Image (cartoon, rainbow, N blue to C red; front, side, top):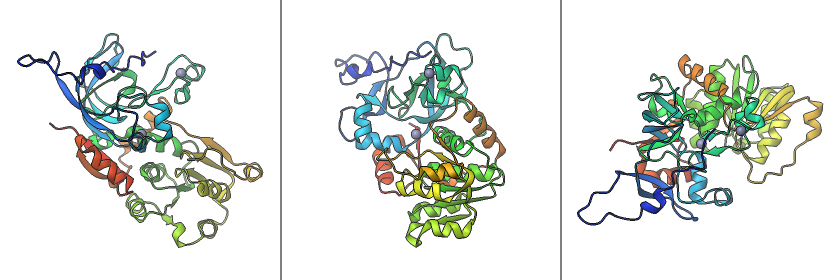
Length: 372
Ligand SMILES: [Zn+2]
Ligand SMILES: [Zn+2]
């Protein structure tokens, strides 16, 4: 469906060359944040403003946000080193206005306000044909496999530009890709009148608190160790936060919810949270796993899962496009309390400062602006 292999890396050769004195460059250039070499760090570079292509739209950015994935790319960990082929403009969470539509695009128009879905799916594999595009085997990711949105203009496949109601503030519209992870995880099972345990209060965990409350959960309990994040959890309306610093979390949970919680959303990627999920979830409940583990092989008590008849589901990305529809309805309802998660706003060229804040664990969501 998408010629994602054409990843507008033409700038790689032109970016470094400057025009001869007295001549105008043949194109206007913009500042972008890019991984230019296979090593830690990212740079601000001048690149040609991208041109629209068939099946794509050109977006003028209004806001973007930083994801943990961007931090992995910045630090150049094993995953980033194996996946990313520099040079690459990074950034996959953004929103803006369509300024140009490419040939063949009929369902998007100039002036549409849109937000990024970072997964470019093929539309032809078995999963895509069955409506399971979130697990498309040919998925390419904006800002990872093709150029992303930490630049004033971006060109992406029209399907990946999700129409968003103008009533949604730009600083929230920007991170719907991440909010969609929380919606997908929370809505992978029932929520109404349920007691939900959410392990890990990173931005997606915090979003999930708000989603569960908005969707009618009876009680939302979180685990988190960082005082900074515990404070944010209270601001988004969590009912109770249990910190491992204050003693045995499993024992305290058993006291609080004697029969076990109805659902656990595992968002920490911490091995102890996986064990806690199995222990704390009631028979017939569900565990939805979103957090990724540094070590993929984990030992869990499988017999407990079987004897308790727990539904375990792995969550990746956002359902295409059910999650987006659910998210739009939640945003329209006015019941999501997301603003406390936005802890910093800065110009996108201040990327280094954003990275430092995130590395220090002193940020919820960092939102970028693009004013000249
Ligand atoms: Zn992300
Ligand atoms: Zn596919």
